Length: 188
Image 1 (cartoon, rainbow, N blue to C red):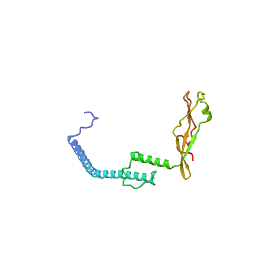
Image 2 (image 1 turned 135 degrees about the horizontal axis):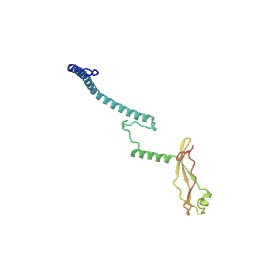
Image 3 (image 1 turned 30 degrees about the vertical axis):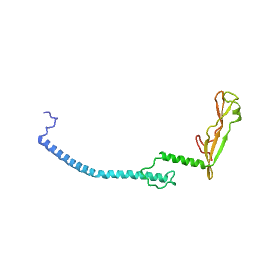
Image 4 (image 1 turned 45 degrees about the vertical axis):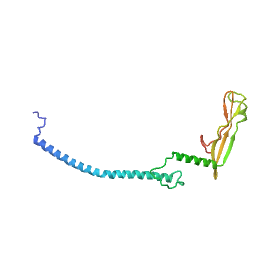
């Protein structure tokens, strides 16, 4: 035997150490089993609490939309459940929006604004210089809304256009000034 190696452990010492380790593991196992039983008893309560939280979140969201929504003053109390809101893009909603739009458009006073072509543009074509520039049927009018104190006014802008029969160049009257491109509101 070499002097640096530890003396071999006796069988009895190893057995005692294994028994002590086994007892420790049994105690830990018993504690884990008790904790597992306790967790299993708490699981249904946790599931119920999570369902309640989800329901309350849906109700808060629905009530927030009702209070802070665009049409909160017109919202009537209905028997519909808060957790089952109506889809805003369903056919019924689209029909209602279309009927509201038609009603609003028919009640608003209309001003027709005609935009004519400059005489210079009608005398000769800008592209080829031909004097045969012919008027064409106008495009459908564009609509612009302006707030005049106390009411909305709808302006329909009719833009004249003409075509050169030689080069097929189309000339349109200048469009109305807009607040920003694509806007349907006037700067009023």
